[in-house]
Length: 271
Image (cartoon, rainbow, N blue to C red):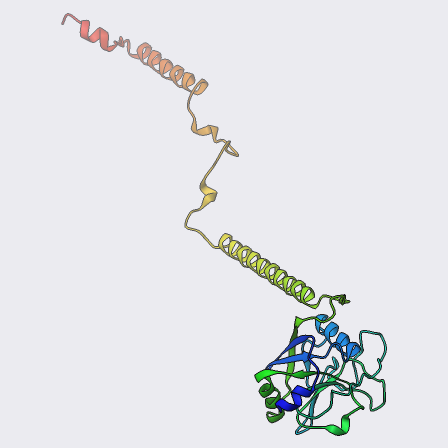
């Protein structure tokens, strides 16, 4: 295997695909396949491959991804159209772990989809554009995709070495994800605040409707609504009572010829 690697040209560019089965470290041939590499790197930068599945897994042959629809029928290139094949004499399908453009089984029909070989597939030479390879121990994660029959997914892509510094992404996937997450947090906070307000209002309402031991209706603040003046004996009524008593005493004196003496007269009597 090392002798085969020595025949291949040096790589220029590196990307890590973070998947549900582990990282896939990818080295790119930016000089030998510039169109394919630029397309792949920019789509990675734009988050085009985020949360897409490996929609095709063929044991001993290849695993395929890069279709946002997950059907194998979708995907577009950054150029707005399919782009041409790029073949190089030192790049052959001679071993596993090679990254290549998936096409429509016709020349120059490359878009966003790609595949990685699981073995030597030399019948694909000069039919599909090779633009990268899986490097290091991450090759074992690739083999696990083949062994474990599940729907594996690309979570996100990280650009470690961008061979084309002039690439301008059409969208910033990371910023969009952060903005969406902030929006979800704000919406959650608003819902929680509304619920807390509702619960507090219900508690106040329940408290105010409870019966209490104090009859506040018996308390009178300010001016009473009515006055019972019949309970008061001051002024004219007191004078009338005194006049009646005096008249009764005068009548008794006249009838009996008795001198009515006061307590002072009694105390002054010489007897």
